[in-house]
Length: 249
Image (cartoon, rainbow, N blue to C red; front, side):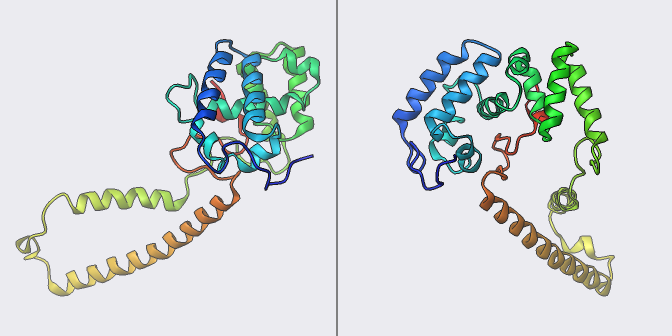
């Protein structure tokens, strides 16, 4: 049973340098070995040391656990945030698969299977990978094919870029172009005053409309930040929800 979200966790609300120093030293010793055993040992260590051994605590509190977030930034740690996160996810997945199958799969295959959300389908794919001795590429293709067969499955591949992000890119380019030369009266001498006023009015209206969209996006970001487990600040390499594609070497 999951512990309460009010459970006191080591270093959760205050930065504990001694905890981090000990964690870095211990994790570096673990990391000298590679593969599934390394991921398992790192994942179990992170769960036990920072989250009371509870995967649910990790899922819900990883983004606001001060010391854990700092751990992934430590330059003296021999691996990064992505490996820390995926190791915990692999530990959970090991318990979802038949033991003989789970132990027969290499870490690369486990990472691919992290992106399979249907538990029954994950088990079948894992069994097939072992029985047919599928390579990493073969398993990846099998997973992609299985997604296209799911009822209502979305098109496989990266989702389309939101219109707001496209507009932001264009706006940055336009702003850079507008500032690329000084504004001088002589440059506008051939433009009618009424034409220039109309153009400025259109720019003002466009900026007002953009302000409305910006406010909506801010609300989306604020809501996402409140969800904790579902939101990853831009630039921080936390994978957020389990998606195996993000962790494939």
